[in-house]
Image (cartoon, rainbow, N blue to C red; front, top):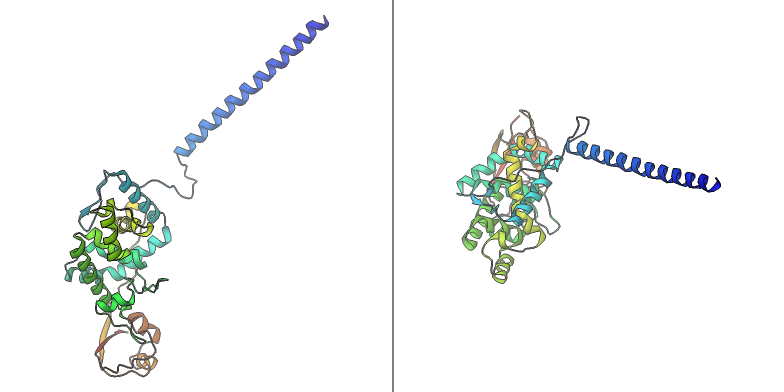
Length: 310
């Protein structure tokens, strides 16, 4: 009787153990299944829904196609599209700033027979701001001093035409055109603008490569053209990427001004601004290339200064 009772107790304990683990297993499986369903069907309570970007379509830069059959090119483009799509504040500022600067840039590019897509290079370089890089490149187009002067921009203690957006855009057109002549296409011209022509030439020769997409370059230049394409796609079709601006949300162009020609020294730009009925701040906003508080102008050059209308 004692042995029978012990056997019964043992069997009952084993049964309860099996029942416990079976119950735990099925509960866990049910929870996992529910979780998976919830993850693939976002609810309306989420602050945002992050989705991939559609890359199953053609892409190009300056009329030159991206080889989307190449998995490496596809993944590199996908990376830049995702980064710029979900880089919300920066990308929205790019779109707003485009209203201010693109009309002028488009005209200068057209006047120089340049592809319109190169306006997006200025976005990639500086976010359409008169930025200064750690290497000393300045302005919307990020010219270093030597290159800027080679392409006709004046730089001294009082004037820096890298900040003169019309003149700097014209210089960028010449610079890129020279690279197009050297390398044969606009894609490589853009890469050369980023890393420098001599370095790009050395890499092409060493790697026996003839196009950008087959080159193994430094991290920045390897991403550069794909970033231009991503910026272009998002800024051309902002609604497709979730960016919505109402009428008037973009920044207005600096178009309502008159030109005052000056060929004599200006001892004080503070006084000059006051004499024309504007603030010193507005003088600098419209003429950021005037980098001092005076304009000595020993050479008696004729400068065109923008004066905003009241």
